[in-house]
Amino acid sequence: DQPAWADALLDRICAIRVAQAECLVAAGVDMISLNDDIGSQRGMIMGPAMWRRWIKPRLAQLIAAARQVNPGVIFRYHSDGNYEAVIPDLIQVGVSALVTVQQEAMEPRHIKERFGRDLVLEGTIGLQGPLAHGTPNDVDALVRRQCQELMSGGGWVASPGNGVTPDIPLANLAALFAALDRYG
Image (cartoon, rainbow, N blue to C red; front, top):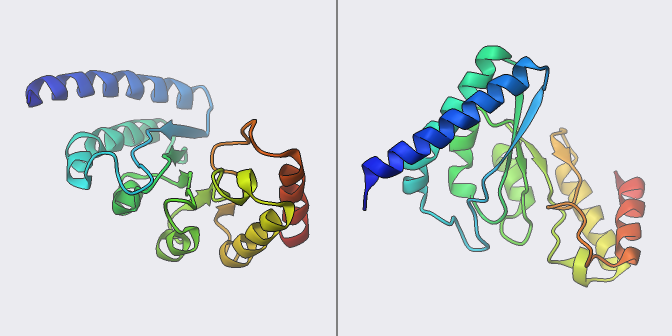
């Protein structure tokens, strides 16, 4: 309803984030993780056109500013849910890795096939499926499948989507590590 006000607010937030990124990179940080949560289980929280209008230009500004200080700085971008519609935009502005490719909302194999040449994928082992609610055998099968589908060509970091939460059964966590040792 008040686009001028929204622009002013987002520009101020962006200026703060740019200053933070420039300081971090100047201090020697070689990787920055951005956490936006733009996706839900069924799609984006805001439509892609709205994201492109309000968020993308500021994200591009942030990444460009940090890369003025160190062109090699890596940007990891976190969102839960399904944000596939803007993955090409994320690549365009300089995102290097996606954290999380939530298997409950996007198919990691499909994302790897479409974008694996340009991005590292992390966090493909979902926290709402076999890891939380399955058996150790279910976890083993999931990890085996993901290793078969995602390891080829590199660009995949095998990990749970948002770290390990307290509701993950210890037996399933042990199965996760054992399966990664076995298949990865």
